[in-house]
Image (cartoon, rainbow, N blue to C red):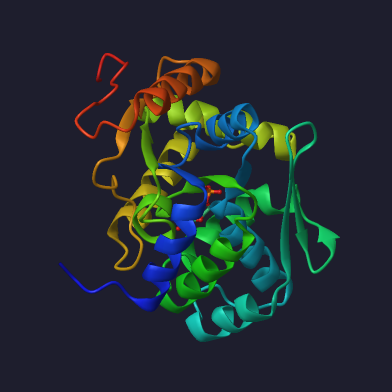
Amino acid sequence: MPKPSADNSKTAKASRRRLLITIDGPAGVGKSTVAKLLATRLHLFYLDTGATYRALAYEALRRGVDPRRETAVARVAGRMRLQLDWDPARGLRVLLNGRDVTRHIRTEAVTEAAAVIAQHPNVRAVLVRLQRRLASGPGVVAEGRDTGTVVFPHAAYKFFLTARHAVRARRRQMELRGVQGRSPTLTRIAGQLKARDALDRSRVVGPLVKPPKAIVVDTSRLPAERVVDRMLAALNKGSDPSRTMVTSDGV
Ligand code: DC
């Protein structure tokens, strides 16, 4: 058994004091919708870790910093003042250095830059510390790629969402239409998702993997409310690592 790092033992102490729930999975599986609903139902803080990568990507682009330059991006990360203002009625507001950037961080350009900066170990280290600081309140529903493995490895409950590729592409298209008023073709989005999946799964630090003992939910055919109902049922039963809730036809 490896000795826990200082960071990990701090996280362990913090997680004993409050309820931590993690939801990981690739883009377009409905993590944000489900995490917000679950946080609302349980009166917990909603932590969108992807928003920290997006806000940093936005800030790097705004400052003319090339997302591929790890040291320069890490420096920007260390200086940014980020606030995640969660209110179940109003939704999530992302404030960067006091400015509301909620919508600006959802564009295609920022999405692509975020995928690049998320590859840098030094950048991830800064953002993981920031995410732990942002997770305030008596409990947290954290959502992302590595929340159950790296950010909160001691979380009481861990979920891993999946969905069929075509479903994910359609969801992403709807999201982009909502943000930009237009979107690329489904074929283009499907290609972008494949490329992001490859980056997310292959990086050395904080890759997208199912956390050990996480409960898997396939959301391809389930509306978000039903996914949340199932999660709540699992929470009420207690986390049973052997359970897998596969709900699609598995295509
Ligand atoms: O979930 P999202 O699309 O908002 O995430 C934006 C980017 O940040 C995406 O490229 C994956 C990355 N990310 C990450 O590497 N680790 C996380 N915990 C959350 C997001």
